Structures are given as structure tokens and as C-alpha cells.
Length: 300
Ligand code: G3I
Image (spheres, protein in one colour):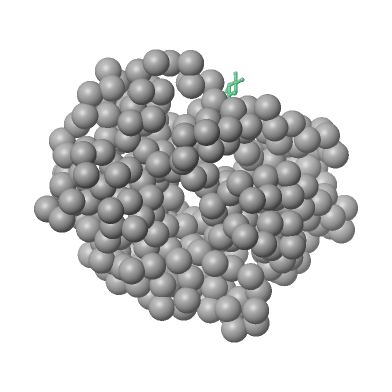
């Protein structure tokens, strides 16, 4: 193939980008999006603060701009994200106990129902595990409603949109470490007990290198019977192009690695200000990292 999307499709995979509704009027941005990518993720527009700014009042205007654009051009959509400790609306931040649990599950049900049939994969829960060596859950208002909040969210999402792939998504899970093993144990438990989880997202916000056991880590999750996806890829540093190639080849080497999403289009669109971690420069030109990914997708 000659683009990221067509080359990935030839390998049975998608290649996506996180996009912002507010940038869709930028012609350079839109041209690259439409030419290169066959999947999109809303960078912020589907988060809890964006979709339910007041309790029980749902707003989908910006998210719909992204979803409608994608669907009209045959791109699939990754939904990001139904529940997260960050970017909660202020009304939820102060809640606790059964009131918060009920509000959270209602949020999952409402948003997943609204988009039923339009979402390829949902990040049902984002970043619920703690960093460091413990391998346990992150403390949050959601976690304090009870350890079963994650499975309750997956069951609600499954009831609302049975066709969507339901994912758990996190960062610093790129190698085999305490955090990724904690998540691995949760996924194994969910599969054993019939909790509806279909995929695990590895954000892959990387700095100049990738753990040597990256592919092995993807594979051990795939061996649990779930798909794996690289969901927020960006890579800083002088080894950028080589590391992009390594990550792409790792996904292609794992049969259940179904797609890669980069977290933005141009360096100037990135949340990592000044780090230039993406595939296109600020003028929209292809970088060596782009060539490395395209070459890897085409078997180079
Ligand atoms: O839209 C408001 C604007 O009205 C306001 O004037 C401005 C002032 O701060 O803020 C704007 O909102 C910002 C929003 O991005 C849109 O640009 C928020 O402050 C800012 O916090 C938010 O950052 C996003 C961040 O998630 C929030 O935690 C980044 O764009 C987004 O790339 C980032 O994405 C996360 C993933 O969801 C989860 N994994 C990590 C990843 C990187 O942090």
C-alpha cells in the first residue's frame, strides 16, 4: 500500500489517529486524515466531561462531528472513553458511594446506547491501575465505590452495544511489569468468569525506546483470548523512526493485534508539546518515522 490505512488493511488491520473536532476545519489536517487513516479516536470529545457536562444532560455535538466524518468516509471509530478518573465533569468529581456508582453506570449505558452499532471498539475503562510495583488498582472516586466497578461497567456497555469490542486501556503497560501483570490477572479473571471483555489497549506513549518484551507482552494478553490494540502511540527522541518500526512490526507479529492508533496527526497537534512525537511535522510533511511505519506495514 501507499498509505498507512491501505497498508494496514492489506494486513487485516486498521491504522488510526486521535483527532480533535476543533481541528477539522484545518485543510492540511483534514487532507492527511482522509488520505492516511481508516480509523479515528476522539482525543477528548467522548470523555465524561464532554458528553455529560451536567448530570443527565448529554451533549454529542463535537463527538458526532468526528463520528459522522469517519462513517461517511468508511473509517471505523474507537470510542474513548466511558469511565476514567480524569476528565470527569465537576458534578461527578464530588460524588461517592452508590450515587456515583449509579451515575457512572448510567453514563456508560447512555453513551454506549447512543452510539450503538457505530463503534468498533470502546475503551470502557481507562487507566484504572496504579503505577509502580504493586500491580494494584489506582485510588479514585470510582475505585472507592467498590472493586467491582470495572466489571459493572463492562456488563453495562455490553448490554448497551453488544456488537462493539469492549476494551480496557492503560499506559506504562508496554512491557511485562507489575502494572501490566495486574491488568493481565484482571483480564484472565474476567474471561474465566464471563465478564464481557474483548480487547486490551496499550497506549504506548514511549520515549526513545520500547521494552524488549513488548511483543511478548501483547502476545500473553492475546493468549487470554482478547484482541490487543495499540491505542495512543507517540514516541519522542532520536530513535523515533526505528522505535516506530519496531512497534509496528510487533503488532503485525501478533495475530490478535488488530490495529494501531497514533495520538494525533502532526507534531503540533500533540499533547506532548515540544517533543515532536508523531508521524507528520507541523507543516504536514511525512517524517522518517512515517517511512519507518509504512515500510514495516509493507513488510520492510
Ligand atoms: O477545551 C478547553 C478550552 O476550552 C480551555 O480554554 C483550555 C484551558 O486549559 O482547556 C481546553 O481543554 C483541554 C483539552 O485537552 C482540549 O484541548 C484540557 O485543558 C486538557 O487537559 C486536555 O488535555 C487532554 C488530556 O488527555 C486530558 O487529560 C489531551 O488533549 C489529550 O491528548 C489527553 O489524552 C490522554 C488520553 O485521553 C488517555 N491517555 C493519556 C492521554 C495523554 O494524556
